Length: 273
Image 1 (cartoon, rainbow, N blue to C red):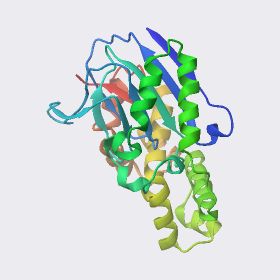
Image 2 (cartoon, rainbow, N blue to C red):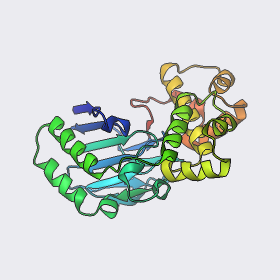
Image 3 (cartoon, one colour):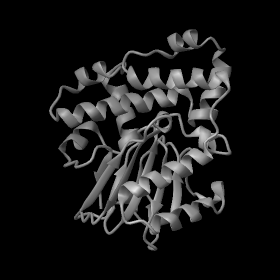
């Protein structure tokens, strides 16, 4: 397997968390359950074989993705190919920071996977053609960086800085953060703050906080499989164990105990088929 990981240099690293290139991955399973993590992604497929989104229950193909597509922020898990026989470049945006590259409100892409040419026109086709002419992964990363820099509209609205601050606070301290406290720090009315947050991040602050608490649980379970569930719930900011289990089942499609028994190779990817 070939795998390369890249973190962009400033100023792009403010908006893009990382880029990944991989090929030759041959897992035994064909389908992964991808869990909500608060990120949006741009995916560039360097093969001509369509990649499918599957029905979460039946695992039947429900959507075909061709060449370049955008995966919006998710509030529920999604069933995707395991990466077998793929040659793929994945650009993961920083949480809440994809909006400078998009000509539409981010919330319109929430829980959606969309062909990128519907958003960027022929530009993504041109980008893919350039990438196909390169053999070195880091030349590909540099090519994508140039594309993103050309597409980026630097934020000049002061409300964007407030939303970025809110995203950072909710991401770093999900177990301790309270939305009432955050609203007081922001200085906007709650209604206006929710409107700004949805437009730039894709979901309400409450939904985003739930995803961040869930992600704190996932990180904890990746380090320690056998934990007292009531204590884990309290440590991650849940009111009680029932609330914790309800949210976990919503985001993972299974109970925490069943999840902890699974063999997970990559965080947020559950082999299911």
